[in-house]
Length: 374
Image (cartoon, rainbow, N blue to C red):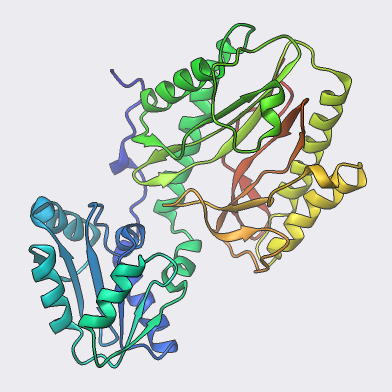
């Protein structure tokens, strides 16, 4: 497969990876931890640039840093940390030796934070054993909170991933016709995402037609598009580790008056939510902008999920745009706005954009039209 578009990462703004551990050190100090041990590979990549599939990172409050991995990544870890301008002791060894050296590295730490939400029970139990004499506590969302505010390089990569998704949908749009199956369309869409330069999909693409559209996270099936269907397409691309996320709902021929009605309601609700995105605005306010409008139109019980979420190295990350999660949006956060209505047996509508939070509003990165394509 020859890519139509080669994304030139060296032309994008550099990410400020080397500034992230110093920021983490301030948080470690504020929480009275002596050390943080990181096992979540996404957080390790964020803090160091290392993208291998096995690793442990330890950060002491005095600024010492050590990263542990195995022989598969000896060269890679050195190259990626150097490129990211991250200084750390690098230990390449078997898992057993890694733990011995890690124990020695944190031996003077009385209070050690581990990622309680992301760590397996047996790993936590092993740490409790080898760190005997230290107080092992959850470190909370220290790193995830750092990740919520993106630097210029991160924003550029997410924007590039959004551009890939936009173009991939446009390239596949000729398949919006009767007789094409959900699986056929999803395969073409995924192929185009790679063709346009992405390294992978952000997640398994959702292509849900007709009554399947009433399932917010439907998987593509062999069902073929028929006249009158609405087709919900939710998909994204990854560029240099960073995700995009968008949803568009398309009509196969003219849909029923009920489907047209809910499409227009969701479109208006989505615009209201997107217009509410602004620094210093609460995430709950953005959620209410969508949810209240859909409720006023009589479809409150058919909007069954949160309005949005953060996007970055993970497709779903802080902050959550939901009625149950309240935080102030900060400039350079990236969030989605994706209201929907789902009617069992009939179909569904969801429209989603990825936006950058600015002082004056939300900058939409996903450019595909939200006018109903028929």
